[in-house]
Image 1 (tube, rainbow, N blue to C red):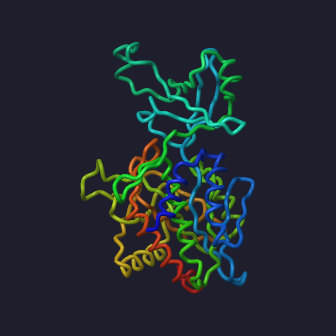
Image 2: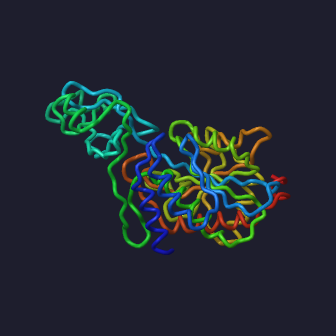
Image 3: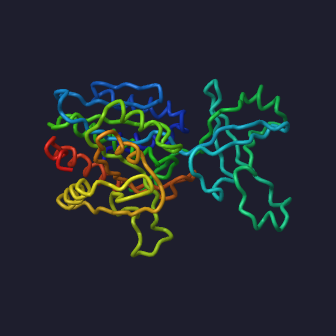
Length: 357
């Protein structure tokens, strides 16, 4: 894998992209894609469309999707003492929050550091120590001592978005440690796949979409899918890994074990004929394929597959350890295998094959 691709992954991870505020991710992705994508556009929801073009309009549209947002927060109120109430944007585990360093994006575009704070241990009762603190018992502290200072000196306002203050870094030769790999690693797969297919002959109109607000209800994907009316969708995710706490026989998303496909979650049962096509292609390539049956979670595929007439859809994921926390690990080996698999799937797709699903 070339260094440019690795740097792309890290830049996407670092980009500020709370739900509804994905502008920095969109800018990074569009800047990378301009050398190999003919048509790049953005809509009012911050969805980015990367249209490969080159085929007649009647060729079937394939949607290659990843979501650009990350779990974050929004400032809800400012206390008289200058601390800030906040609400989660997306599903956070409360145990991971207290003591975390975050950045607030002000209306002027400045990034203000802050700490998610709860009552210091020195002042806790025994009951406090036993209880698991929740976000409504925490505040963000930017160092202000009054509401006026928070407003006028720091420029913080109600409605400002917040994300973890984490900068991606290499760990050894294979791992990257950073934030937001759910789903910035999916964004990187979409971009790298489109780049590698630049000179390949395809039989489908391939449109890459980096869609907004997935973490708060798959909102961007619903609008994007309605706009392009895909005949088939490949949804690329950064799926939460379960290999650090699960018995070996039950691990379904382990690091360095290859891409994962999802048979079901709360939002979708994957098209079984499309599943078989992915399984067979992975076997031909010698790529290990993990398979999951999830009792929770949902993805953009959950809204895309319900378009009128139905859209055969599948989720292909790069495993991410500690997704929906401030710090995540992902493997470049898993990323490379995922890109290779997705490229081969797209090269094989024809109208007749899509109709057979």
